[in-house]
Image 1: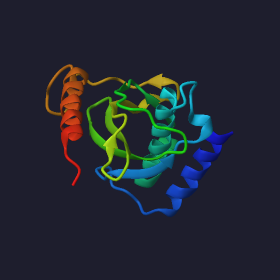
Image 2: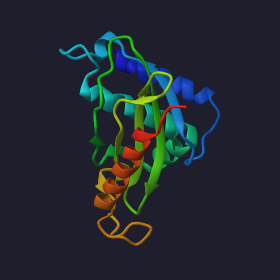
Image 3: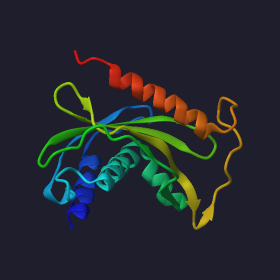
Image 4: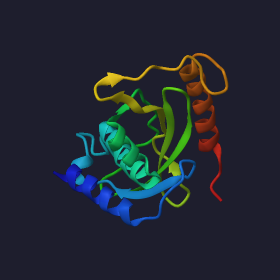
Length: 176
């Protein structure tokens, strides 16, 4: 039930906030709730992806993409995820999720999420990978592109390497 309440809260929240441009960074604060915990007493690994879905709902609504998806009959799908866990989030701990659209090609949208805690924004679990917001249209898969915008083939492997390098650089950035 809590996840439905969180989703309803996300929808109500995003309708009263200003519109976003696709290149804008979205940041939101959450708290680890008791039903987010696993047997080890920290936030469950799967819950990170659930929080990411809540952020995507807000992003889609605030950029106006949700209207296009509903009109065209598109259904958002995750085409893959790469996640690196640094340290767990403890019960009732506040954390921030930072979201940015990293890029796209003919078939995929690449999105970057960072889970941060504390004043310095210490990295908890960077997540990156393709999210296919337009992967299915009324049950029929869309054609996948052969090359990314910059002409490189095998875009996902190159994108993973670029994302890993960018995440490593972000993790080394000192807190000021």
